[in-house]
Length: 107
Image (cartoon, rainbow, N blue to C red; front, side, top):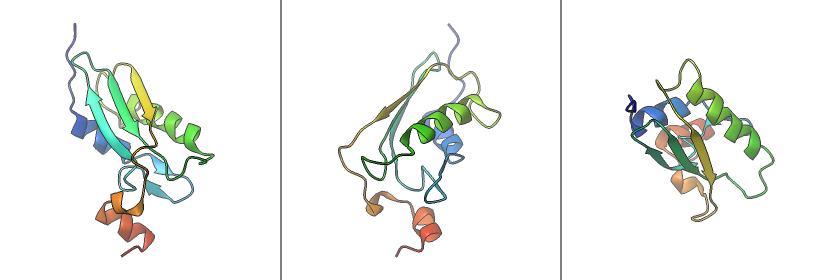
């Protein structure tokens, strides 16, 4: 069995390339990523939410996560990717990073 050559922090950094199409800010700085688990074999589980339950672009964002993690700027030897959408706790602007708030002019 091959061991993962990356960490959850590496995955988080790659996910900064996934941009919310409506807000034009990456999903990490928006605070949409609640957790990242990396299994020893390289499988990745991403627990995340969306800005609202009715977000029509949810499937697009989930697909982009897989595309980015498998792509040139992804992580080496990534295995299966499982994106888990959760609604609790609900997203709020309080979850955003300072960079995300700057991008949207929120202070």
